[in-house]
Image 1 (cartoon, rainbow, N blue to C red):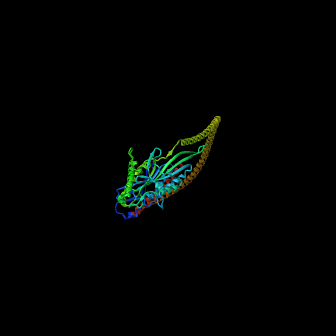
Image 2 (image 1 turned 60 degrees about the horizontal axis):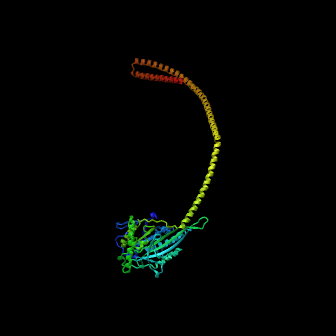
Image 3 (image 1 turned 90 degrees about the vertical axis):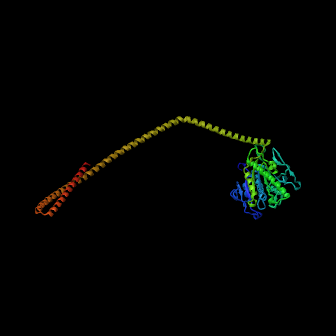
Length: 523
């Protein structure tokens, strides 16, 4: 349980036939996840767990009660009780029916199942069953003719307890369930307008569990550890009643008054504890119920409250009252711890066990010390060998370093010689290539020079021919001029200009070839 807070859940039961006939359009409740809201959105409450009408008692037990029941075997006090208006499903949740076990039966079986998991502990389980009827405490495990009102006592060791209460030792879960069923036959029931078999009292079925651990000591008989004593209270509360709904009168009216008074005191105790103020008086003594459950409410206990409600609109106010009670109860923090009893013999046994443990630890440390000592001697020998061979190792290191440096110089010289040889070979190869290229260029130049000379001679011949033609044309022109023929004169001028252009082109071509020859000779 987180921080030992009182765990609170809400369980809705299905609407019954009588409520179906009374359905109206007035206010009711709707549930979304773990939030309960009134249809007019004026009230809203959120809890850790809200169980819908279709849920099973097994679901409620697994979430709300299983850890508490098993924790009692480990030495924690535990209390599980059902709260709500009359006919809201409290007894069904706690006691069950033929088709489904109740929380009481499931808790009993889990307690004995948990005990079987501790073979090294001795257990003693005692069961008791009381009824609080009209503020009188009755032992339901006594014979009917021996029933008498019991009183509440308190001392330092036992705390609050009921005097002269019969506690029956049980060794099997079936025996404890049978005791519970036996007590149910003596319980007060009565019919009202809301419930044909209404619980007219509060009941508390209690398991008291004592256990001690068997401790094996060396060379001695087994001893026993501290005694753990814890209690599991399984509470079925009577329901709060409204006379306008139950139509109770006479004895039933008197019973309802006592029930409402004790539940009012329970609500007051819850409210005071929920405030969390120091020094506030908590009225546990105002009712027998809160007095007996004092440890469960703000004390040394793990506690779960299962609040049973109906979604029927006709019971809107009663459901709202239960939700407010649950909302306050979830804020209460208990202080649960394991309950151990230490006597002189237990203390001596515990000290012997601790002494054996320390002896074993000392022997283990001595072995480790011896091991460390041996390792220390080995280290000293290694250091001595290192000192003896240190000088030799130093000389060897120097020799290796010198050899390495010599090898490096040798490799460097070899690489340098190879590089110079390679350069010489490259120089010779380049000279041969240059000579070959020079010869090829000279050959090409000579061939070009011959061609140019030939072209020059050809050009001279062409120029001479052109000059001759020019002279011929000039002669014709002179002749034509003498004949005064303008058309022939024009054609002659055109021909002369064309020949002069050809002459210039030949001179340009000849000049370019001479320039190319000069460049080739320079190259």
